[in-house]
Image 1 (tube, helix red, strand yellow):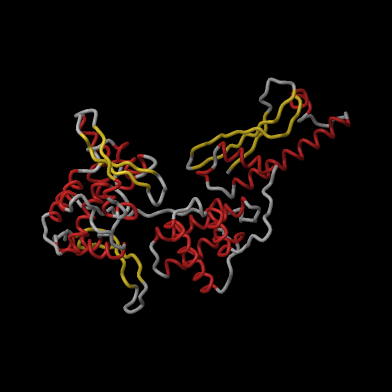
Image 2 (spheres, rainbow, N blue to C red):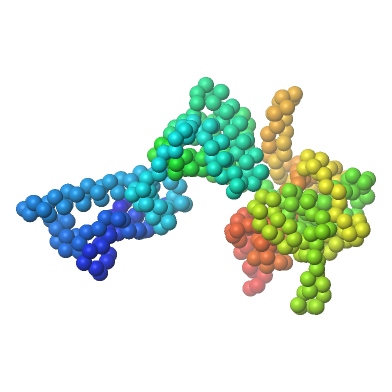
Length: 420
């Protein structure tokens, strides 16, 4: 529920009226404000605006004019409020909403009203800002929507993305055994496409802001230092030894496979540490996903691998081969502890359709290329200041980082007892 009030907050004799939006979210009251472009005098607002049975025709007409305009502004703000997620409602949002009232988005000729077709428009608008992996995810959502439309024998319009659509879409996805978090991510993407369409003048449902998508908690699988030592001490053939070294490198640099698999010795430089006066190796590269330039110190474990390979990194391999090989690496190192997690299984024998199925499996079966980044974050948490860890992993806040490694409030509280 939200309400709008208008106030005269200036000391001047004539000023723009101030709009105040009051709303509640999760039992917390919020108040934000911004100026409109409706200008009135202090005398009119304090003495005449709410007066009844006004005999002065000029003032009576002014009342009609001002009240009509305020009603239009209020309706515009509340309409947009109901289309927007509560987490996005802030002062900047209100300023933009008021600006849109005076300068409404112009409908661009030729923009499609169909959700599926608009995804291509969105990708084209954002192409320079999006990583290839993100575009791949968007195309995955396109495929999912396309199959949903075939199943339902209808075309989904942007204006039809409402609570009814959300339920139908979720029901379809769960029937096809998609993981809850996959469905939640798809819904978030769909809302993003619709909000972008709205900014370009297309109609969206007033229920858009009420569509929520919630992730379910998943198990955080990582390799402990003891398990990494077992892997290091196991002998492998050439191909598996190559994968093993990449796995160790990923666990001590905390980077995504799209980044560490591109490491070369030319990226390494040495800088003097001011504390001990020694030259320390750093690797500098540009993250593929974020385009962020990174400078990461190289752990001794990484240096040992480079020395073994005459200063070179292991040979790069495809993601598919790497994922296959590191499972065998961990299997041969007897990383067999029963662990909760999800792995891809065929929905039916011979269907060639795979979905993530939660369960308890030998840990080596749950190993993927992502395990290195999570192992780095989990193993060094509490040893290295979190500020430094979030820089290397790329998380924007400590809360996001702690959620990534699965630290609960209880975990943090118990760790604090070490200081009492």
